Amino acid sequence: MTSSADLLVIGAGPAGAAAAIRAARQGAKVVVFDKAPYGRDKVCGDGLTPRAVGALAELDIALDGAHHIDGLRMIANDTVRELPWPDNTRFPNHGAVWPRRRLDAALIDAAVEAGADVRWETEALPVLDGHRVTGVDAGGDRWAAPMTVVASGAPGKVAKMLGTDRVEGEPFGLAIRAYCESPRHADAHLEACLTLSDEAGTPVPGYGWLFPAGDGTVNIGAGALSTMKGFKKLNLNRLLDDYHEMVRESWGLGPYLERPRAWRLPMTAQRRHGAGWVAIGDAAGLINPMNGEGIDYGLESGMLAADLFLDDPATAPDRYHVAVGERFDSFLSTGRRFSFLIGHPWILKNGLRLAVGTQAIANITLQVMGNLVDGETPGAAGRIFRLTDRTLATADPVLRKTRAAA
Image 1: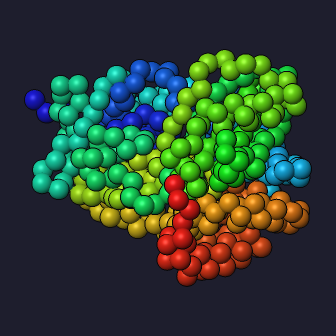
Image 2: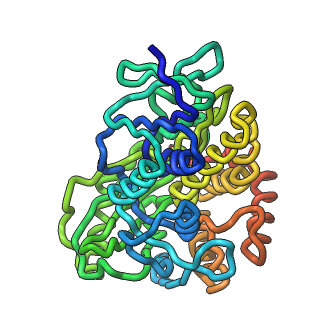
Image 3: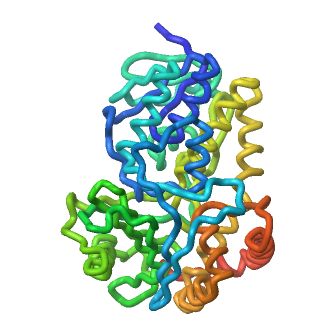
């Protein structure tokens, strides 16, 4: 027996919940499937950029359970710059830290309140009729719908079935995080250390972070890009331990409250749409290569997919692909090219001096780290982005040919 719905969503994280909220509030019959139980934790840095805060506001999600963040403290060697989130963008001038267990619950609860049917501890796999997705098989039941939204995160079974695996040869990231108690848990700034090194002393293209959660704890973590020399040998646990020791005294950090957990950050997808389906968020490779952030892109792509479906289910996948490309692709491709550049240790060292060397440049770095820059950004940040985009596009063949050995 086959049940029917208007929209099926595989994955109940922020991206999938955003799509479900948007569609269900307009009266669509939405069914969401997730392999995990309700209240599961998703390993993440827990930071919300102003762009993410803006997307949550568009979804009418109150941030009552989140810790308010005024800006970013960037550290590079001996240089420390404490910068407020800018007022001159189309996004709010504040961010937040909201541990994923609570953020994800708030979002999916809103989807349920809007009328979505959420099936927990249920693995859903696409049903294919040729190249068209006609629905899903889930928990022994078959569901049919005009469109299926893939919000299943990093590549797995669904990606293999639909061809949404990451593009080989393109950059990806690895990150690790833990929680610690800290007397500075209510700090008003995210902190990012841009100068980390591996055990061999090789500079790491990535950063260490301390994100105060306002609940007695901080999220401490570190991430690295696959373009660095020696990436395959990088010991994430040691990288995190070294960073913990570096900041232990200044933040009054206690020991890890749980075993550190690592995850992969896909930054490309071979496909993100097809007949009867679209991929959103991490499943579509929508992650900023320059900071590893993707919650904001997940929320936006989820809402976009739902809006286009509600307008016309038959043309939604093709229109989604075009719209996502117009909104994100230029910035993300520039970020991937930039990651090849900073994979070279000497370029990374000198680039970091420039990135925080002056207040003006540091302000632009802040906007990049906050996902606040794209092709439509006005002012100096927008001009520099467009110039960098053109320059790196021209240099792309050389960057790839001379990439640091992993």
